[in-house]
Image 1 (cartoon, rainbow, N blue to C red):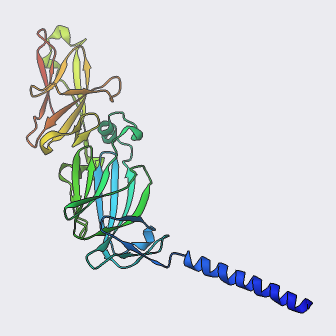
Image 2: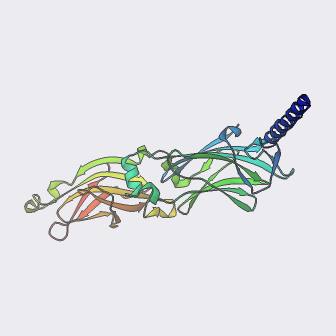
Image 3: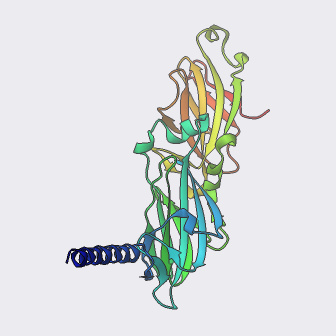
Length: 296
């Protein structure tokens, strides 16, 4: 009797173990999950392979995309992701974001704003006539990956503060327009360090008046001003002024920015390729206008 009771208890334990093992297997994510067009599923980045790379320059940093078209079954925590039918394919998207390194150009670009005060970009997959939003977070060091169900993937759009750049999902080619210069800010600032010619001032005024162009920055965007209109650029001029003078580019007084050092006057002007090559300082009637060339 004791042996039979022991065997009975052992059988119960064995049934429990087998049942638990079966339950664990069914929760491992082996079951297929059908993905419809417009459906977005988070996945591990290692599940997305054979990608085309796109680097998108933004005022806040660089967004890098890895794009893979027509993926096979993709493993996920929910199960194996598969298209719901033959008219749907899986588009893989891996993204990462890095802020611009500190530089004079970044200081001008952000005009004193903190990262949390900047606009957030949006990422959208254009699928035929539909737009599928994909969640991203533009904070330094952040990244993510997802699979998007698509039926007619035409492209990917990245929009920042009203301006949209396009990404070809097959090649990674970016239609950046004026934003292309935001990929690398090292060339956006030029030190000028040109003093006004003292001979342009009346002798009696040379002790209390003077001017100097210290640097110029050419950027497609300035926080607070937005994107330069008509795909042109902002030319931001840093100057030092002794006395009272209005800084002009041509006849344009520009927009004075607040992010410069206390000893610097910083103003932004909208320019095209044929921008004026001379900065003018209007000291008023007693002195007049003094000019500083931006190039030799």
